[in-house]
Image 1 (tube, rainbow, N blue to C red):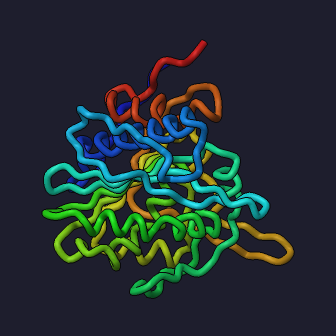
Image 2 (spheres, rainbow, N blue to C red; image 1 turned 120 degrees about the vertical axis):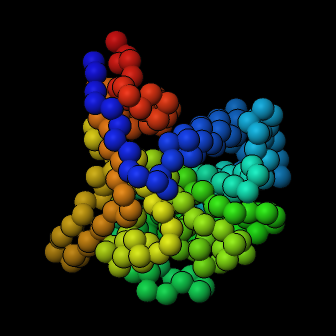
Amino acid sequence: MTSKSLCFPPQPFSLDDALTCSNLVDIAYAMYAQWVTQGKEHDPQRFRWQAPADSGFKFGTPIWGNSEVLRFNELEPFALVAQRGGDAHVIFRGTETLQDWYVDTECDQVPYELPRVADAGQVHKGFFDLYKTLRLALLDQLNALAGVRRVLVTGHSLGASLAMASMPDLMANALVQQAASFIHYNLAGPRTGDPAFATLLNTSPAEIYRIVNSCDLVPNVPPSVFDDLTRHIVYQHVGVQVTYSAQYNSVIGNHAHHGSYNYALVHPEQPQGPVPS
């Protein structure tokens, strides 16, 4: 099975940066796997994450968010901050647990209300509620870095929407914001906010690129317009879409980070990888 090569936007889009971000998302997923191996300990002090020693990055400690299902709150490690030279990276993993799936389905909208952020519209309730539980720890780690010239924000799936939700906050409240440029590489991200939220980010100085497998269903949710008897909800994607087409004959395969998205960035001339038999 073959597919057309990826067609990239002009600079400042960088395939090297996009691939670096994707590789860091793999590390965030590996961090989650270590948490599972250690018994899903919900006390952050008891989780012993072993960061990769040969990545060239200096990592902070895992950043925890509070997911909720039927009033049961559970802390999970969701994000990492890493630095290499003048580049600071903010990395979010995607959906893994039942609690994460519940977050995905909370698609009502709430106002984007955070300090020093104005006119940010409405955003997905589940994504924003989860982001607010981890934002202070994220800002603390980012603000502790020195010599930052660029902040690269990335995530896959749920993590891509957490990354998108973080952008207005980081640009307004991170202490590095006056000295750094902001770039977001979004991998398989669902829609995160309404047209006002999209306008805020599309008119900001940030560069935002959404990498999308056309065979992946997840970037098409929530629907751009949702109506029922009591609600009229409108969502809009943000940034420049970078599309490839790779069919792995399953919803999970088409959406998989490493097997689909990372593979496409490693093999941009032929982004379709081997299909499991």
